[in-house]
Amino acid sequence: MSDVIRLLPDSVANQIAAGEVIQRPASVVKELVENAIDAGATHVDVSVIDAGKTCIQVIDNGKGMSETDARLAFERHATSKIRQAADLFALQTMGFRGEALASIAAVAQVELRTCQKDAQIGTQLTISGSKVERQEAIACAQGSNFCVKNLFFNVPARRKFLKSNQTELSNILSEFERIALVNPNVSFTLHHNESEMLNLPAIQLRQRIMGVFGKKLNQDLLSLDIETTMVKISGFIGKPEAARKKGARQFFFVNGRYMRHPYFHKAVMDAYEKLVPVGEQVSYFIYFEIDPANIDVNIHPTKTEIKFENEQAIWQILSASVKETLGRFNAVPSIDFDTEGKPDIPAFDTLPYDGVQPPATSFDPSYNPFNISSAPPASYSPSSASGRKTTEWEPLFQGLDKKEQMSWENEPQTFTEDEWELPEEPVAPSLPYGEGEEDVVEKSTQHYQYKGSYIFTSVKSGLMIINQHRAHVRILYDQYMEQISSHKHVSQRLLFPDLVHFSPAEIPVLESIMDDLQALGFDLSSLGGGSYSINGVPAGIDGLNPEKLVTGMVQTAIEKGGKVKEEIQSMLALSLAKAAAIVTGQVLSNEEMNNLVDGLFAVATPNYTPDGKTVLSLLKEEDLEKLFK
Image (cartoon, rainbow, N blue to C red; front, side, top):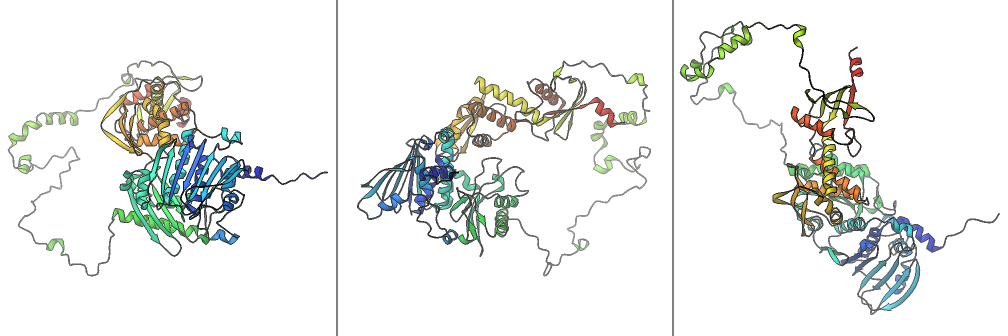
């Protein structure tokens, strides 16, 4: 039998590796900008066309490369960051594997212009699909200029499954934000289709955060700073009152590298226990400085997962530092039970009086106000207690004695069984319930509300239990979907417009759903710099926070990225319906409950919410009878 195992060509091996390292245009931006930071750049300019699908250009003023280094940099496992395995435990750079440039060159057309400091001429290198097409000397500025065109041009399946331009641009901006937040000493600019989206000068960290996420965030941040022999933790955490359900800015960085760490996230959120409502999140920007020998970053191609040698100890330090910061902010006074040196406080009965004596009172033990057979003491009269004449209060109580006598002295009436008949109640028309099943809601009967959450109502076959919040969501969802489809929205102008700020990563998503927001009744106008003015909101959502509504819908759209327009419309209608629906615990009158039940059974599918949650449940009559056997 002939041999079947063979070595893959380098071009094929690079394409396979690129599937892990280069997943989308944002991956190219991340790798090239991190290389620029490693090269000592103080200014990085990023320009993308068509969300990076057509062109990605990264220009830096770093050290640059020689002619030989420029050619070798695109070879697999070629790197200047490490020399031996031991260097993996003393990393001070973002890159170290030597895979990024080789992977990019394998799936795109790359042009590099680079020049070292004090060099007379630089080098231009053109590569397409891992094949070097041209290399020549050229005059250019110090640093490196990478131009990556037609990403995945030779991998049609990968290019086909790229998301929309708005989604891919949002991913690019997210990666850009992470790098900008951890390098405040470097200035960055970002352009999309020749339009400037970000211009961040070198500045202090707090100002860099505001430059990315808006100045409004500044008032919600608390400084965090603690240093131990094991780790130094610094940064900012959000105030409890600034918590939100969606869209919280949450970032962990270790030694200048962004990381995801659910275990440390739990340490932060545990410190906010009972300070923020359940389900809400707070923003935080937390930076760890730790000995590189105590962490391992070489466990995932994207380098966002990091292992810590003393993870549990750092968890405790992080939790304690967050609690201490929150304690300083709240300024909660401590209670000192040390009585040493306490002042002598005289007993109450020895305190001097200033001449004011308490009124004298008398009590007749024979008088019991709860015994109707006993009468008040003869010596008591309202006039004696109040010091006023009887004629001043007597008209107010005219007829009271007569009514009391009638209520207390009359004997209770007795009724026979025949006299307990109730008047006939009209039968309501049949309403849909379940599949192929019909029930009748008896509209004239009294509805009952249980703990402000459930409505009990009588139906033909038993007792129906309705979740009031979900029922209202079901009703409002259909109304909002009808508004979107018909474009017959009813917008209510705000007397004082609300101001809302979006991060660069959120703006493309907002623009993509702007038409649907307008169809719902929102009126937003751009003020520049990521700020928008909310001038109008849908009618009927009084009492809700427009800013939270809009930001929540944008975050939901980010989570549903890549969906078709109809799904985005459904998501927006559902988000607004949940925000505007009757909350759990709200007490309703019988008329309100009746209207809610009527509205629920007027929709096509009353049994479930749009996201599949049960709205109502039926307790059949035979099941009720079994409970009392």
